[in-house]
Every structure is written in structure tokens, then in C-alpha cells.
Image (cartoon, rainbow, N blue to C red; front, side, top):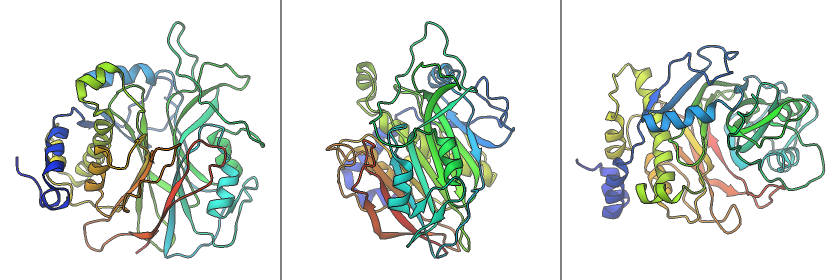
Length: 391
């Protein structure tokens, strides 16, 4: 197997060997039929979400069990509030919300110049249209099914006590007048509330309309994880895809021994393979299971038809872990790794970017805009953000 010029020149022999090892990880993904639903999700319109899941039977069986305990995704594709913004850039941010602990209203006002006022939200000085990717969002609803008796319940997120109401992600979107796409990964504890039960997962909030929704079930390691993606069409600009992921913290001892502690790398490569599968299906090129993995290992600089942001909580403890290096190869226009901690002493949260390869060139990253937010807003993570210049 020959190595691509990007890998030969960009990271050297050590990364090339690491890439070869990654090819051996079982991370190939397969599109689900458009009619695919977790049990209890029949109310979702067929074809609304492009589902992609691991092709390995062991992963699928484990994910199906977890899938039975969550409610349907939440989609409100058009923001209720409207605002004008400079049309040359859009701001993209990622933040682990820590369930109901993070003060989303204060974060939006302090960092994104957006004041929430029950759908009459208003932009402040310096406002730009934004897309906010949040991890560990929770949703409370009677549509979340009762947990099967005798099964182990994923623990609820430990939340810091703070002033103000504890709203779920759907209520926050309504209150702030934002478009939202939320897909649950797992239950948020076993508590039965008067108005339903809770699950938790990833969400996308935006001041611009969302469409072309993607849900990617990550290869199963410790818990069910679902990355979410959507396409935004900012006023006066080209389309931009955003993908929000949250990787497992740490696998069990057996998984560490079996994978060489490459669980997060397998999950990240699964997301890459899922995006490749979607692009291949839309191009009309037949795709054989495993074929994209070989391509992914040899040509990360392939022809990508849409500029894409990939961001989230990778749960990494240093800035030079293999998962970061691999994603940087796949997203070559990413900002430089700064190694700054975002959760305690660890650089857990990251943002990646790749520009559309076809002419005319799509939106591009503004590298100097990449920064860490230095206030937690009652979460246990610091956010990251950058600007994307529109074409």
C-alpha cells in the first residue's frame, strides 16, 4: 500500500506507520436505510436524517440495545429570531455544555453577542451569525421511553449548581429563537420526572437555517455516541457543513488490550469514513465496504465537495495524540494545535477544518480567529471558536 504525498511530507515516517496501524482498526461505516429508526422513533419523517452506523455486527448489536432507551431526535430547522450580520464571515463554536450545568444564556450573550428573550432574541455589538456545537446537551420529554427493568442506567451528568432555570436543549432553542438539531446518544440517568425522562447527546444551534441532517453512530467502545451534522447556508455565502462529535473518555481494560488503546482513534476514523460514505453515495460512485477505509488511509486530501468543520470534545489528554494527528491530516486547513487545556489540565476540545477542493473554492478558515474561551460559564469545559470566511 503506497502512502499519499500528504502523509509522506506532512508527518513523516512515524505518522505513516501510525496510519498503517489505523487501517487495521475495524471502523468502516455503512449508510442505514432512510427508514431506519430506533424503537419508539416512528414519528420522525422518513428521509429527514441521513443515518450512518458501523458496519461491524458487534458494534451494531451493542448500539441497538442502547438505542432502545432514547427518544427521537429534535429538529427545528429555521430560527425563530432573525438578525442581520456582516455577510463575509460566520462564527463556529464548540462547547461541552455539561448538561444543565452550563449557563447557555450567559455564554450566548458573553461570547456570541446574542441575548435570549423568548424568541425575541436580539444581537448585540459585534454580532455575527453563528453555529454552536454543544456536547452533553440533555432533553427531557415523555417521548423518552421508560428504561428496561433490570438494565444498567447511564449516570446523569453531574451539574454545577448555578443561578437561573435548568432548561433542556429544545427549550433553550425555543427560548433563544435558534434553529436546532439534537440527536440523543444515551439516557441521562433513570429519574422519572412529572413531564418525562431525560436523554443526552450532541446538538447544533444556529442563527441561520439548518438542512441536510446527518447522524453518525460511532463505533461502539464504552457508550453509544452519536455525532451530528448539518449544512448551513449563510446569507450571501456558500454552503458549510458542520459536524459535532464527542468521543469516549476511556474504554475498559479488554478494549485497551484489544485495540492498543486506539478506541478514540477508531471512533474518529469512523466519522471520517461515514462522511466519505455519504459523499460517495451522492456522487453515484459504487462503494464497497472497506474500500473507503483503504482510501482514507492513503489519500486524506481527496476531492471533498463541501467545506466542512469537524469539532467537539475528543477527551484527549495531550495535544499530540494520534487521533488529533489523523484528523488534522483529513482536515488539512485546520488551525494549528495550541495545546491549551479546555477541561482541567487537559486539551480535550478541538476544531478541524477542510476547504472544498472543487472549483469554485468554498468557505475558508480565518486562522488568526481560532481561540479558546477563557470563562467556563458553569460548565466543566472551556469553549473554542473560529471564524469561517464565506465565498
